[in-house]
Each structure stands twice: as structure tokens, then as C-alpha cells.
Amino acid sequence: MKKTPKTTTTTSTQPFNINPDLPIIRIVSEEEEMHVKMELEMEDTTHDMLVKWGKEVASDEDYINIAITDGLKHGITSDK
Image (cartoon, rainbow, N blue to C red; front, side, top):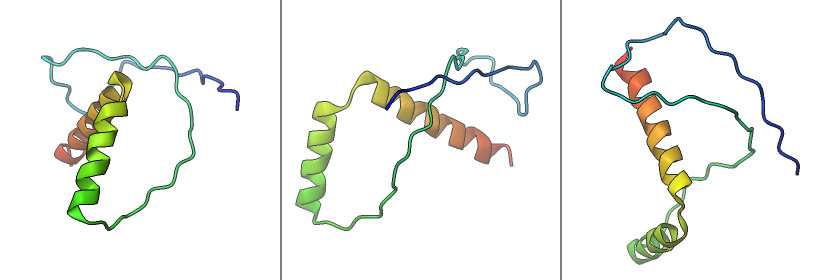
């Protein structure tokens, strides 16, 4: 599947207060990906094994995506 970057535009208006101590991160492109979110049940030992495997294969990019997503969620919920 070919990935086509989308053009994004920025404006100077900000929808919520931005902490001036945070670094600026600019979105230079984005890609839409299809995924399925599942709710899983498993034994604790199975969970621990999957966490271990995930840590072994996770990339720096994975950790960045998790941190940005969590930060955005926190920013949105704290502004309500």
C-alpha cells in the first residue's frame, strides 16, 4: 500500500492555552491507518509475557506516538 502524505495547514489561533515550557512539535505529514481496537482478557502471566515482547520490539517512534497521544488526551480533558 502506497502512503501519501497529506498537506496540512496551520493557523496562528490556538484553541486552548499552551504551556510555554513545552517544546514546539510541528506535524509535517500525516497518514491514515486502519486498525481494530480490541478489549482483551488474559492471565497475568500472559499479559506479562506480551508486555515483555512489546518492550523488546517497540521503537522510539512507538514511544513518541504514545506520549503525544497521551499528552493530547490530557490537554483536551483538562481544558473542559
